[in-house]
Image (tube, rainbow, N blue to C red):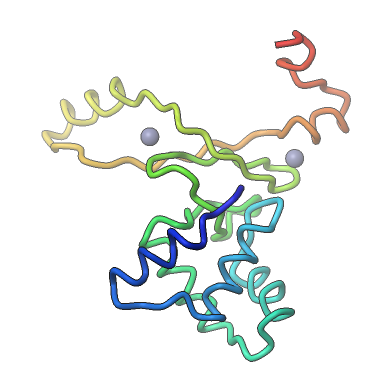
Length: 154
Ligand SMILES: [Zn+2]
Ligand SMILES: [Zn+2]
């Protein structure tokens, strides 16, 4: 998933922050990964380009980039904290429970769930987080379960 570094730099600048070399290395490590990545995986990947990078900085940067909406926090395949690039302002992540591949989807109709929650609790619901997990097409094929959409030719 592509991330717009210029746009992210702009968002940071609006907060008086810069897209430093360290932050850029962390951002790239998440953007270039083919699956969701844990902070330690980001640390390993980003240090190739930025050897002075520390694990604490990685944690802080992941936190910051999630806060400004550039990254999304997800549960990785082992239910550890992991990160994926966030393409859309409001989107959700589906994570493959076999290989950790993450994809974003933006169509969510949560009205029925939100209405039910509001009715039951009396809360005014203002936000939701949703993550789905399953088996990606590649893992399905490897396991001899061809992707349905592909089999239908859809
Ligand atoms: Zn997979
Ligand atoms: Zn949603």
